[in-house]
Image (cartoon, rainbow, N blue to C red; front, top):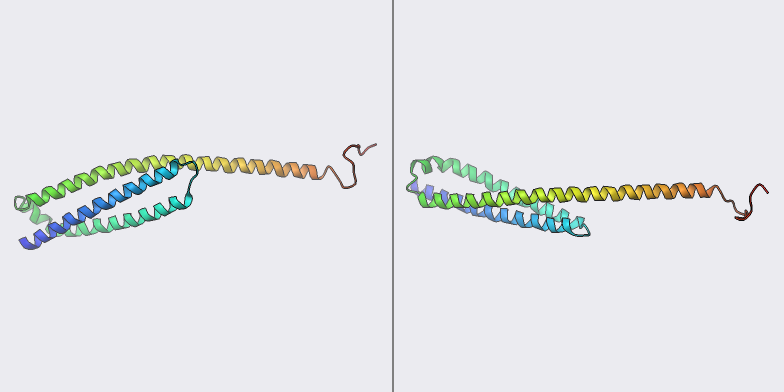
Length: 162
C-alpha cells in the first residue's frame, strides 16, 4: 500500500501544481479584463473572448478539484496515520495550498474591482442610450411639428391669414 500511497500523493501534488497554474492564468485574464474596462473605448468582443477563456479554465479547475477530492479520499486516512512517513510530501502539498490561497484571494479582489468597473461602464452605456433616445425623441417631435407648418407653394415670408 505504501507504494500506491506514494504514487497517489505525487499525483495529488501534481494536481495542486496544475491548479496553481490555472489560478495564475485566471488572474492574468482578470487583469486583462481590467485593462479593457479602463480603456477609453470598450472592446466588447475582446472582453467576451476573455470571459469564454475563463469559463474554460474554471471548468478545468473544477475537474481538477473533483479528481483531487476523489484521490484524497483514497489516501487521506493513510496520510493521517503515518504523517512522519509522508512529511516532506505533505509539507510540499501544504505550501502549494498556501500559494493557491494567496492567488485565490488576489483573484477575488481583482474580480471585485472589475465588477465595480463593469457596473460603472454599464451605467455610462445606459446613460448614453438614454441621451440618444431623448435626442431622437426631440428631433422626431421637432420634425413632426415642423412638417405640418409649411406646405409646398407657401412662402415662408407671408402669413397665411393675409
